[in-house]
Image (cartoon, rainbow, N blue to C red):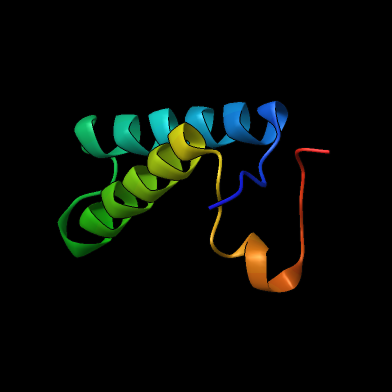
Length: 65
């Protein structure tokens, strides 16, 4: 798994993750949609930590360089 995400991309994803979690915990969005937002936040957080986005790989996108 070769990293394909640059630092700016990773920071943006972390900020989006924090926003999605905040929206859920402030109960602005609840129910199944809220759970989906938490899952998306988790995926964004994990891809940011790893520096690898599996969606970028097949497309050949690399924001690290």
